[in-house]
Image (cartoon, rainbow, N blue to C red; front, side, top):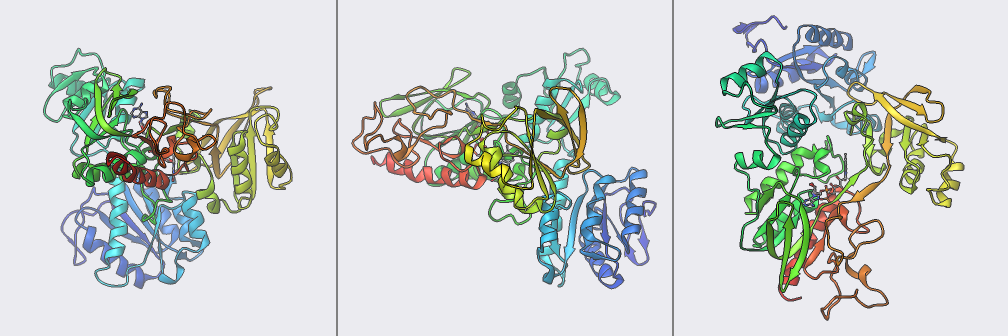
Length: 570
Ligand SMILES: Cc1cc2nc3c(=O)[nH]c(=O)nc-3n(C[C@H](O)[C@H](O)[C@H](O)COP(=O)(O)OP(=O)(O)OC[C@H]3O[C@@H](n4cnc5c(N)ncnc54)[C@H](O)[C@@H]3O)c2cc1C
């Protein structure tokens, strides 16, 4: 197959020789022929479509493609294959190609039985799709196209808006690449000590420049620039306008983006300030599976770009680069100060600066985030953990709750706790519950130091903190609950926060029915309103909020309704 050239083969249009492969695995020649034909008709110009009649043939083909250095874009496997299952086969695809998308082909009657749900949760397959039945079958093609689009986004683009020439292991080079990728700016990286990197530097007359060197699509060259310099060179606004906005949204995570969409679409002149990347925490998630309307999940990056574009289409103005460092009231105006000294003046503010989960910071495990390594509550993934070996890192209530919840599904839950006891950090009722749950084991005095997996988590390395001895254990999932911090340090003391730093809003601000000191209005604070009138908090930053994408989006949109009430003098 890899050797086929252009021209006609067996009456079919020839397929491009070096194009990525779409592999269909089905042991029924009749149905395989039909689906293969459908794939070839739609994708044959850009992909090599090929079929395999058994799991063994598919594995042989995948090995040959890997050995030829050929890219596999998509493997579609029938749910039922003689001698194995489509799920088992797809679970092995990443041994041959680390980025190939894996889609299970099912019949209508098979819709989402438990093994499929479990396979998605464990990252063994990316999606399932109902076998095409009509011609053309657009829902089938939409599922295939979505997978191919996701793949194209993850692979180096043909057109690079930005080319970065830098040292491979420099933290600054990594930071620039990370920010470009999270802000979805097509870019390429060229190691400064590679032939390509040197040639590029020569070409733009920057052979002696200090890396990293940024080369833009329009020929501009920046030597070791700051993030703001890169943004400015790309024509991105980095300072607020000098006039007064109706609404300033601080933070462009899900809550901020929702506030921007609703604010701008409802006629408010809206500014959104973001110092890092659109999408916030959600933007770092490889697949969000519990957001309404995306049955196969959606990458955080995709969701963020969609929301960003939507807000932009309604006229929201983005300001990128400097974080907010202060907020004050000047009469009816609310003034946000930025780290670069500039100010944004507005009639109302939605604070949506979210929070950050403490991360393990272990590169091998960071690479498996979302595919076996999970940050935060375990509810969404619990079903997929049925009969699996699951680990929870952390010794506080959130870790205890996750362990108890997961124990209802997993074969065994092992809690990995650094300290000598749970009693110091966890509520007694949870300690008792854990002790009384047969399939929860608690290991004290240990920490996770590494992990492995091809396409998903497969093993963890655990170290005994006293002896230093390490051991490697098989693991299907690791839930990390080692704390989170709201990003509220920049807020003035006048905005009431709880002892963990979350912004207190609405009736929670009342004490004995009375508003907090300094509250100058007759009415009490509105839902989501902070102790400074006209300043609202939405999403993870708010005390009592549900730490979810959907709830952040919900709060961001509700905040706009309250902003209208406030601006009308409510
Ligand atoms: C790895 C990972 C995976 C997740 N997966 C899921 C999932 O599958 N499903 C789900 O429902 N939830 C998931 N979550 C939780 C979800 O992402 C969050 O609940 C959600 O992103 C909260 O949105 P937010 O807008 O309130 O805050 P954030 O997403 O935290 O966004 C806050 C934004 O504010 C910006 N900011 C911070 N400080 C400042 C400042 N001083 N000035 C200006 N801007 C600032 C930040 O750069 C950031 O962009 C996941 C979280 C993580 C970390």
